[in-house]
Length: 165
Image (cartoon, rainbow, N blue to C red; front, side):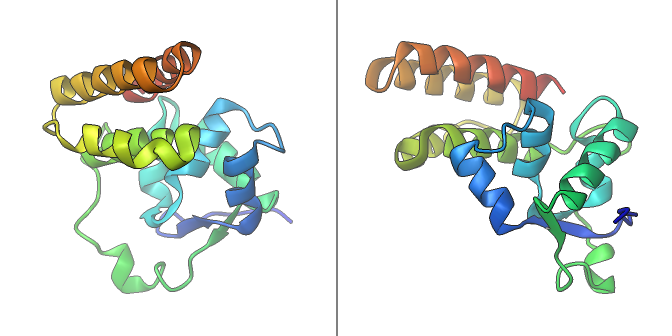
């Protein structure tokens, strides 16, 4: 089955996609996982294409995730009214909201039951590049103190990569 994704479609995770985020059983690459995290049932395909530096590559990855059963079209949210939502990202970049959503998704994915405390830390900072950097540092400090030094380093690296895209 060849997936021709329409830019106004809204994609959501399937049970297989949620299982992959929880268990890493299918060993997706980081770029695939990032797009899988972002496909939350609210973002249109055109917004997801802005998640990386190469929209064509993002489209290929989304097609693969769709074809392999990790993503499905959210038909209710993809209705014509949803396509005209005033939530579109400005040309040439991601919205700041998507950066915060990525950061929150990362802590939820990596830290499970301890994620709510990290999400609270993230939400304490302003929605600016400096604020997001400070939120990452606050999370790293918390992770080092209460969870694990190695996990703090992994989180820091992944968060920096996500925010630089």
